[in-house]
Image (cartoon, rainbow, N blue to C red; front, side, top):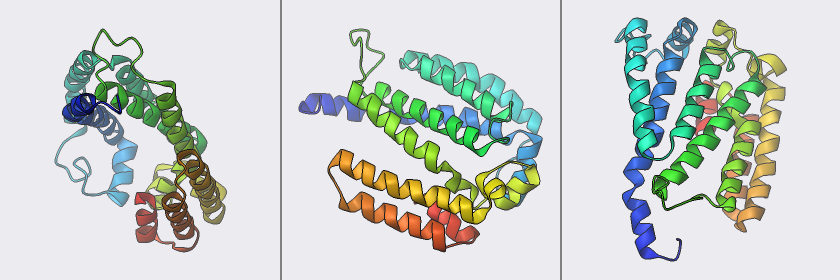
Length: 238
């Protein structure tokens, strides 16, 4: 596919469908996540601008919106050939939110998030190359599976970076995040060390050394030394 301009043109034409796959599944997750009472309590401290804590929509209305949206999302993604990924994402959303998988253990939380990213990346690849085409028996190559698995491995070992900036809300909710369980200094080390490792590992895989090493080293520096809510928010975005 890479050497055929017509194939690349077809992939580019399917980009809006890739965006839809990701947007629709993130919508379901956000509705499920933000409707919970403990989430509203947390968001009043961390993200007061969100619709529920701001009073722009009620929990009941959010639940009704989910009842309507979920079958529509899975039907449309079935047409795109990614109903399995969507169904598994719905399952992970249920485990993360309603079963409290994102609250009781930061490691379990990382595993759930990394699994979701694997499905998002895999589903995006399938939509991009036209997985709904019945003539394509195995649309995703082993190298592509390896890429998505590598991304998830990075996430499972570093995702606790998002908890540095949200400690006030997480403490109010009773969520057992890495900074609250391990202590902030130790938690920062559990982020900086894997970031440096994956910077070298990905550079070796890609054969491209300077960008991964520079960015990874900068992130590790920021996580270790540049502390505070604002700095931690910027480190998480990086």
